[in-house]
Image (cartoon, rainbow, N blue to C red; front, side, top):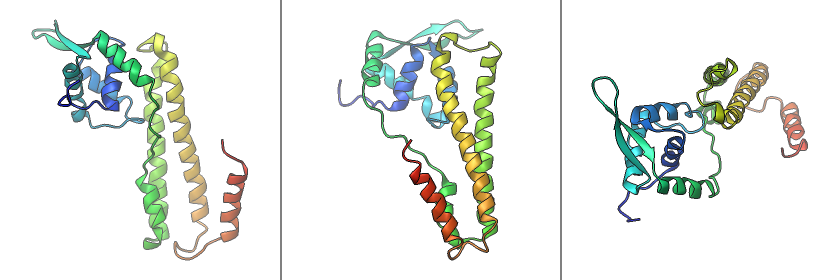
Length: 209
């Protein structure tokens, strides 16, 4: 491949993977990628450029498809695209990353009040609950026999359960943390060293998962 070709990213390969399911329009691809926003968040506007990269590499092609008065353009994977996806799937994945502005604020809470810190953790919990509800909404149709792709249910549901379990874990952590902070006098100075370190000791003693 020429060095002038646009660089393919994980998002590129994710869209290539979608093309193994069926042909899609650019709009449909972007919408499908938004369903995975909890594990791979990307601005929808950026997703519209990805199929063009696949075309440039010869991994996808386009063809018009009748749709009302104006035909729409749909993307289809090519044999070289299938091989490229297979090659990518064989490579080790990057280390998972997790970002939470709430935790950054927590680290520097001595510059805020106890009430502000509590509000921060309450918001953290609200985000976890909202994420649980959004993921559950995606998967409820599965329980009603309305899976979009029944032959892929196993591949969709297992990662979905991870998202649900993670959101629930974060909400439960927030509940325990709120209960603990409410006992503090302020965010400055040691609060209850003994119980704080005891909880840490218990977690470490439990060993790696």
